[in-house]
Length: 266
Image 1: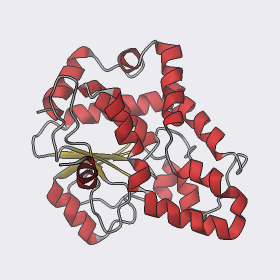
Image 2: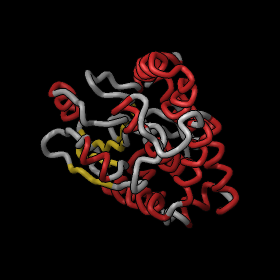
Image 3: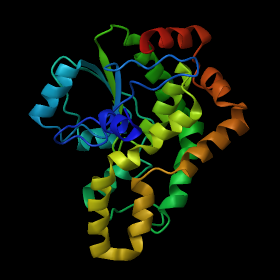
Image 4: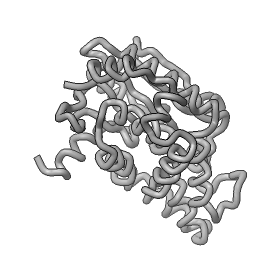
């Protein structure tokens, strides 16, 4: 199977779901693979159709971890299959990524220079790895991951666009399993392929209203290696390494890492 086919298989085909992706199949440095039908990442669940809910139910979805703020949740509550456990773990008190506001109004009333989306996103990634609330959310995320131990059960984690808060959650998770960083970065950047049509549509609308904002909104609605590099740099400065950060800031023990590997690897 070539890389294009693998990536197509990784992006789940839902009617109204954006950026729904399997994390199964990634290989660790030790030669094991992440199990399929065990964990998926996505953007918002508020617009899912009944067919989408049936798809997720048949897929085995049992836990929905929502990284959005309470304001985002109130505005656009998740639609999930009956019997799915819903867990709210807000990474930020408000959606600093601005993704939810852009979805609502195309050119949003945002609390920063709207021509400076790129610099804003660099600041967001610094906050994701330094704020106490973020660390608490990701620590609790690991508790949910550890609880997803039944073979046939699937856990989904998401935010509004499924790229920043969700992206860092995937980084932390895949790293604990032993997936090499270059592979983790490929998964992170796959958002730009998964969201391509959706983002292109938003940018068309932005261009009609104010063409000067296109690049700034593009920076807010996509991911960049530079965003991840900023997070990595701050982690190195504060903790010495990603390994130390996960152990000391997210409080994931060696035993828990071992348990996660038993649950998610084959």
